[in-house]
Image (cartoon, rainbow, N blue to C red; front, side, top):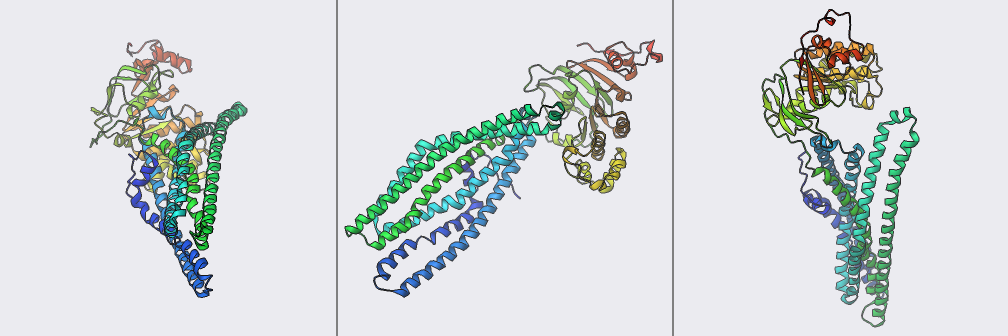
Amino acid sequence: MTRTFPSDAPDLIQYMKAYLPKLWKGLFHACMRTIVLAPFPFFYQIMVDACIPSSDYWGIMELSLITTGLLLLHYVFSVHGANLIAAATAEMNLELRSRIFYKLQYLSFGYLDQQKTGRLLSKYAFDTQKVEDAILFTCNNLIPAIIYSTSVLVVLIAMNWQLSIMLLVILPIYGISKYFFFEKIANWNQAARIAQEKMTGTASEYITALRLVRSLGEEQQARNQVDQMSYGLAQSRIDLTGINASFNTFTFIGTQFITLIVVAGGALFVLGGHMSVGDLFAFISGLPILISPVQMFTQFSQQYFLGEEAYRSMKEILDCAYVEDWNGKMKLPDLKGEITFKDVSFTYPAGQQPVFQHFNLVIKPGEKIAVVGPSGSGKSTLAHLVLGLYKTDSGAVLIDGYTQQSLDMRWFRQKTALVMQESILLSGSVWENIRFANIEASNQQVMTAARDANAEEFILKMPNGYDTVVGERGSTLSGGQRQRLSIARAILRNPRVLILDEPTAALDYESEKLIQEALDRLSKGRTVITIAHRLSTIKNSDRLIVMKDGNIIEEGTFQSLSHSGGYFSNLLSSQGLLDDTDPQATTKAPYVVVPK
């Protein structure tokens, strides 16, 4: 399906106009369903003024048959038009949601880090639905009602233009409504939308953290926080209901006043001989049709303002300028995996202190390096910058000598794999989770990857083997099992660059042993960056990078740094991993100390 989303549409009305080519067939049928009913007041006037005085039974029957036929046409046009409009608005909503989700994939993490997931979900799920409801109501109800009212008004003017002029009192009602109510309704809808986003964001956050809340016994604190946000939404809804009630009451009184004018004025015209009883009967029968746009206008204003505010909310995402600034197109025919940090300085968008200042590092193709250091030293940031999840403030990250700006970074990411401490799994089957890294992979390739990741043994013991659904975020699996599936996914990716972000930090010894075996197989022939707190897992690395406060303070092999008496040696000692009986304990091996 071709994406034709009018991303430059400034408001909901312009958005609907941009989609008229999709809506016009449904609108045509919806309008025709009302036009075929327009002659009814005229038919009633003939029945009362002509047929009744002359006892014309066949005339009444003839007009009744014509009316019945028009009602059947009305039914056909109504059903077909509603289906066409529903299909068009559903397609619009699909494209709108697709556009929002697509935009989320390109927003910078500097922006996303400051947004609550629930707030973004509210825009994707709830706001799009409000827009669809507003468009449905406009196309299927309001516009046909206006056409119907206009058609009937033309008929009534032809019958008696003097009484029809009295109907112009409708116009001030529209003007007063717009002047006194519309801005207030718009403002309260905005407040309700913001309150809903806050509530959804807070509730989503605490639902995600249910294990934490329950393990700490802080259910009441979480409830108070969510209730506070819920109260804010409830209060905004109360205020919105109040202004809507005032608006509804005003329009009700206005329409009743119009009814009084038509009935009283018509009665006076009949008494004065200026119109017949049939004309008055026709006006009274047509009056609800004339008033219906006013009543529907009340409903429309509420529905429209909900949709307009929802559309404005989504435009915050669609028009957001905080997108990844990677426009390169280059795809290297033979990616070697050399990574160079050249005079890199970087501060997180919401951060106060720089993580890196004039940072330099060269990782050779196929080299296995381990990055260690205390929290906040810049280890994970280094991995984020390699993947281009954040952009450097100055300096450059080079891949095989080419800047990230010149490369197609999404292509580069497809040549990498990331295994994190907390493995992220989808709620589908084992097949789907492993194959997510390579959608074209065969079942045999998936099973081979699982076998190499030491995962097949536990997979085959599961109720449905590879068809077993693992639950959201892999909730039905242990930490070690989730990690092995994550490694299987990375193996299936066959990456040139592998990033291991503390993959065994939270595992028991047995799980760590199985996973380390799988990682050793996965690491062969690739450039590997391992971020580790558990130092026992990095003995086989080609080079260790010891970081502190965004600087490299030591660099060398595991053996050379173990008994150097430096920072890494102290880290080993603090973890009980320094073997004082080691022959090298008495003789310091060469190592490199890099000054800040």
